[in-house]
Length: 415
Ligand SMILES: Cc1cc2nc3c(=O)[nH]c(=O)nc-3n(C[C@H](O)[C@H](O)[C@H](O)COP(=O)(O)O)c2cc1C
Ligand code: SF4
Image 1 (cartoon, helix red, strand yellow):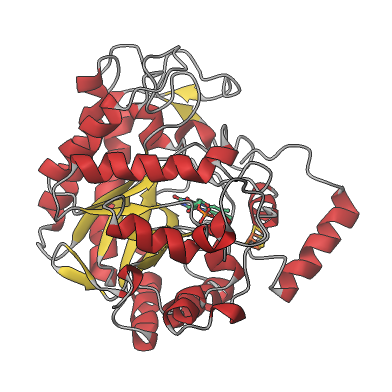
Image 2 (cartoon, helix red, strand yellow; image 1 turned 45 degrees about the vertical axis):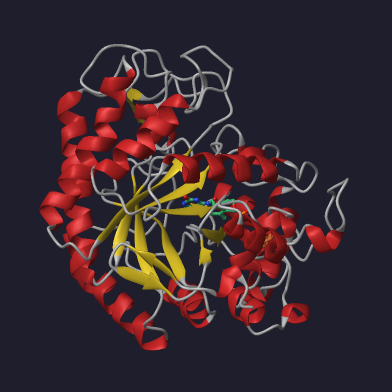
């Protein structure tokens, strides 16, 4: 019998040839114009050769005024040529991958010195008091930029877009209960959710191609008071009713897939990417995936995150379960079989070994370079460096040694 992970899955009018996907992973290695640079090419060439059925291009910005990272990829009219060349090239390596672009805006978590922080909440979130309050008109401009970006993604040859509503970026900032004051997209849940609904409807209408996939990565629970999936602006209690209503509303408007996530790397990093000291958070993601699966139509594809920590079941700090029943392969197959998720997406593991899918599919698991969850890759990102795996990719190993010698250890894991 074929394993569930090896079977194809239909996403809208496209078909992913297998159910091992690659999660969005910012590499911060674009050129001066925000086009894919040599290191971006190298990363995605390997991923396209690596056997995955679905790849989510890392967070790409539709403007450069409010960004979190220097050398972030951008998607503006000036990038159409560079992105088209990039997609065309990657498709010569593998034309079967379903390839979507993750469209983002950083809002209040933009970098305060290399960029400008803006916020939508009258009361700033703790730690982001320096963000400038923007109004409806500026939010409308941002939506215009994201819609234009979706059209550029379409024209560049992407299969679709991921309108990002996760990880504390602008989409999360608008959706979360902490956005409590009344304005067009603030106050009641009906107003907050309307941002995501309006954006999804506009992208679908204005791209106007039934084959073009629109979906979203969503933090089902951000894990702090007032965050997505909490019971109120000051409440730490988990209440998933808004997250459930969100994904159902997105589906109603035409979203073809939901990438489940949780946490916000700027606030609750160990929830968004399970920490090696507390790996068990990864199991919460299974519950959030099941909540998505149970509340969406069969044809809407649920893509689950946070599987890297399971590795081959060995070398982890999990208790109460045997290694052979705790690997990526085990949980991927079981969760698909039991209706928890339809596809799994790998983040850090794809940096550690971009060929991970091919090696699993070809039964060469013993050749896989397993991610150690050391989180040095997120340290590169925090330090505004090109991002890669310092454990297995020599230029990044060398760079991490230099950084540590120059600057010492990172004081805070805070993106
Ligand atoms: C270096 C790095 C960059 C990331 N960049 C993105 C990103 O661009 N967009 C996004 O939604 N998530 C991003 N993530 C989060 C991952 O996509 C994923 O949700 C998270 O790492 C959990 O999956 P894992 O346990 O397989 O790593 C990033 C994570 C890391 C470590
Ligand atoms: S740097 Fe560490 S956490 Fe990041 S991919 Fe490599 S092994 Fe995994």
